[in-house]
Image 1 (cartoon, rainbow over the protein chains, first blue to last red):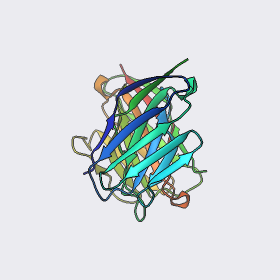
Image 2: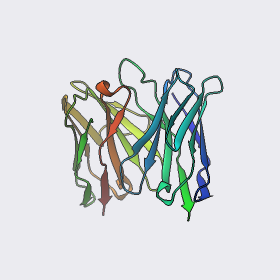
Image 3: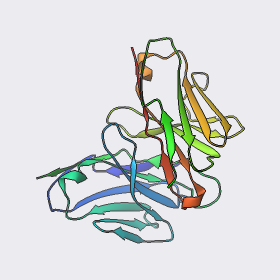
Length: 115
Length: 116
């Protein structure tokens, strides 16, 4: 099955700086890679996702890059703000088409943005 | 957008009792529902995949007789924790994919189960 590794487990940055979280996956069949932000006791919130036919995607201060050859993808948050502080999870799925497949999650990154 | 309603949000039960958690897809048909468990400060771990009209598929190490899953309709899936013990205390969350929205997975709001 799929195995997703995520680093770092904790990340502290100064407000306004950039934050980068990296994930690797093992299953070359995976073709969908979402990133979630989860606040304590709440459901994961999708912040950005990317499919395997795209190398990079950006949405305002958030961007995701995907390297299919190396099987890794990264989340980039620029101009960080205190409200960006949360746990971030990457995930992978072979769910681009056809039947829904489960998401395999990374271990999570606790991001703290220091004011 | 797609919404999955999950109830209850919090439940406290005594050891040995059973607890049922419901997930309903409100505006789409969820032929497949995924059930995850999340312990404090840990990731979401898939417990089982629930398919409408058929038996659920359980992940290795998850007891199917303890975690009963029923997916009787295209909009409702339930997880029953039977004979709950304190070690079953966790955050349980369901997820389904709305095919109308590309690959988006929609999550329920989660259930915080505390077994005393």
